[in-house]
Length: 328
Image (cartoon, rainbow, N blue to C red; front, side, top):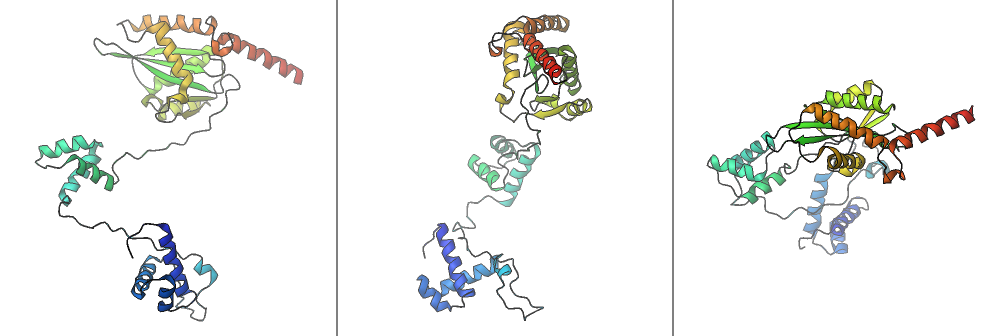
């Protein structure tokens, strides 16, 4: 029979073995029914015997008849097609070259081009396609993605239900020094807060959250951040100690943090600019305080039906007081 990868062929082999084993037909009868040679049926039977992991015979209690229902239910009948690709090739890479490719890859997880360059410096000439093919075969082609557990994202039905935090990297294009602006926004009222720091640290990010909570006079329940280095374990521990839950957005999905990303763009456009003009940190903090007060109390937002964030917040507290009074 010609080589075929069709799944129906695998099922046909399984049906032939069922007739041979369960219905107790002879090899010649099964061969005639399926239009195969008897040697072909024998080879199918050998492959079927090798792939079985279920013990079908009870040597300790031979009185029990073979073919109990619970035993046959665990048997794999379909016989898969074995690949016809050659196992060896005269131009295949040697084992020491494959080991060198894997060693360089596992050290710093560098790309195929860098691996080829390092091998060339050691006197080993390997084509780029061979390195990529080796990485795919050894399952080192892509870094395994680590999925972290995330709490379910709540709907922002009240102030503090969901707060987003991010960091703006404020770079000086002349000397390439950096300042880091931690930005916080409440998704219900769109109240915002920003603070500048010289360091990118988890401690500073957590402090910005606590200061924003005091500034807005809102009790935060959940804070969502991206997967930056400043929002890792220590940041989560400090917030959890204060009773604030944390969650992370998906990797390479900036739309998960759309509100804070849009606020960062507005902050750059209307307050600090795209680049750091070599101003002192005290002056930048002064500008941020003035702009944050303007943003929360005077700036009209189209997304809030031509209201300011403070008006939305005050309206919520007014309705909250009225509902509590009526229930009492």
